[in-house]
Image (cartoon, one colour):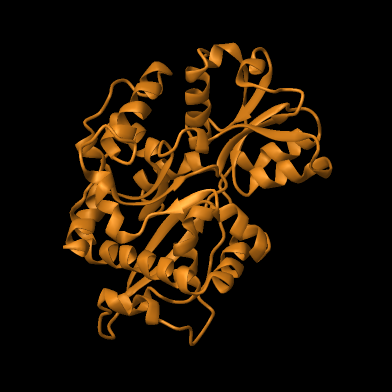
Length: 335
C-alpha cells in the first residue's frame, strides 16, 4: 500500500471578501482554535478548499490545516491514531469503522457523488458482465471498493467473478494507459484523465455513482473524544464550509480556479468535475439524520452499505446507524 502523500493548502489570499459568510455570526477577534483535517483531492470538497484559501474560517475563530492523503483508505486509521483531528470520509468508511468498534461520528454530510465516482474500462468491455475473469483495479476498503461491490451485486456477480488488483486511485490511470489494466474504479479527477487518454477514443464509463444516487456520500467525521473536547471548533468548521459554499455560488469562476489548483486542473475542468457532485447546503443537511429508507438518509444508505460490507466480510455485523453520527451540530446551526 502506498504511503500517504502530504501537502498543505496555506492561506495566502489577503483581503478576500467575507460577505458571503456574514449570516453565520462571526466571532470577535480571539485566539483561533486549530485543527488538522485529513482529506483527499476531490471536487466535492470544494467549499472547504475555497474557505481555506480565502481565510473564511478566521471570522469563526478557527485555523484549519488540510492534510492530504494519497490513499483514502488510510484516513480512518489516521484519525483513530490521532495523526489528524478529523477527516473527510465517505459514509461507508464510517459505517465500517463503527462496526469494528471505533467511535467515529459524522457531524455533517458534505456532498453526494453524482457521477464523480466511476468504473472505467477499455471500450472492448461494454458491460459489467464483461468483467468476468478480467483484472479490475481498485482501492480496497474505499468508496471504489463499495461502488464496485454494489455494481457487481446488481448484476448478480461478486468479486469472485473478477481478478481483483489492489491499487490506489491515483495509480489507475497510468496502469490503464500502459494497457496492463483493462478496468479501473476511481474518482475525479482520475476519471476525466482516463477518459481523455488515447485521444478520448479508448476508454469509457461502464458504471458510475450516477447509477446509484446517494449511495456514496462524503462526510466530515471526528472521533467521539474530539467531539467532546472541541465542539466549538467543529461548529466553526461547519460554518466555514457553508461560507465557502456561498462564496462558490456568488463567485463561480474565481472559486473554480481555486478548486482547480487543488485538483491540478484548469478552472473550466474543475467546473466539469464539480458537475459530478452535489454539495449539500446547511439547510438541507438535517435530511441525512432523519430515519428513513431513502438513500438521502444515513439510515437508508447505511442499510445498503452495511449489507454489502457484511456480505463481503469487511465488517462482522450491521452497526446501529444512530451510532455513526452526531446530529447536534447541524441541529444547533439550523434551529
